[in-house]
Length: 84
Image 1 (cartoon, one colour):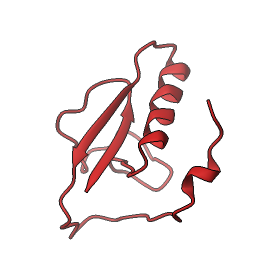
Image 2 (cartoon, one colour):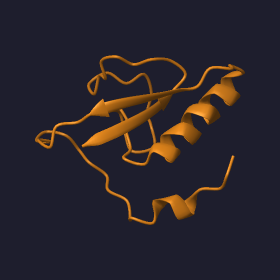
Image 3 (tube, helix red, strand yellow):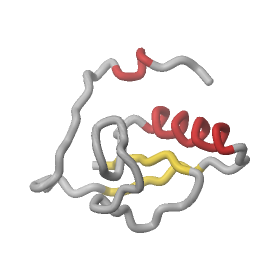
């Protein structure tokens, strides 16, 4: 499965163990299957930090998710976002 991570930099090797702060759903490395969502998040992070660079990281994720906590949202997730 292809997953995306919006960031201000390239993340070559995602690290699910180390997290620098408490995030919305707890510590971890956040990804989505919704490309547009990750793009918006990358732009938002860049804007907040006053940076020009927003990066869409793309990964091939194994179907074996044993040991990972997964939060699944409804299929209509795109309806929750406004154009930026």
